[in-house]
Structures are given as structure tokens and as C-alpha cells.
Length: 92
Image (cartoon, rainbow, N blue to C red; front, side, top):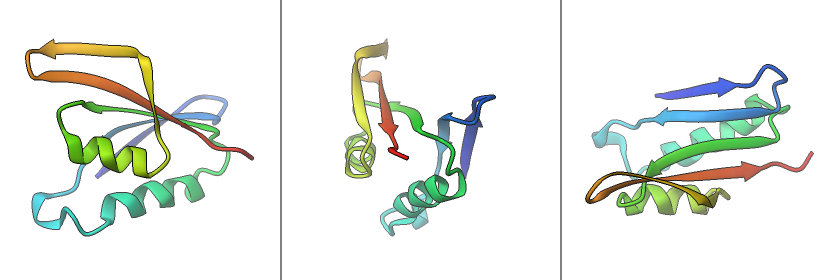
């Protein structure tokens, strides 16, 4: 499951959430979804998403797919749960 929120000018989008059922994780589906949305939304030049910093596999996935952490924005929810923010800029 993937939810995409697109700005009115169709140049900026936010991904939240991206979910893969546990029995299908580790098969490359999330990577393929991220590749496919860039093709499906060619006008988007900046993608945004956030994740829990302690979820190392998710952090690795987003970095692997070209997302960069916005180090100026971090939200501490509770001990052991910190939200970090990522963006990806697409050159057109």
C-alpha cells in the first residue's frame, strides 16, 4: 500500500505511508514501488517522506533509493522512537 499526496502544482509529493505486508517484505517490492511512482508522476521534482530512525531497514531502503535525510528536521516522539525526514530531488 502506498499513499501519495501531490501538491496543486504537481511538482512536490509526499509519501505516507508505504506498507508491505510482512510475508512479502524483503522481495524488492518497496524498491519497485518507489521506482514506479517516479515514472507514473513525471512532473514531480521533489519527493518527501519520513520514517522512524530506529527502523534501520527502512532508513537503508530510502537512502539506497536516492533519498537524502533532512538533518534540520527531527521529531522525537518518545524514547526509542524518533521521526526523521527524507527528500529526493529529481532532475528533469
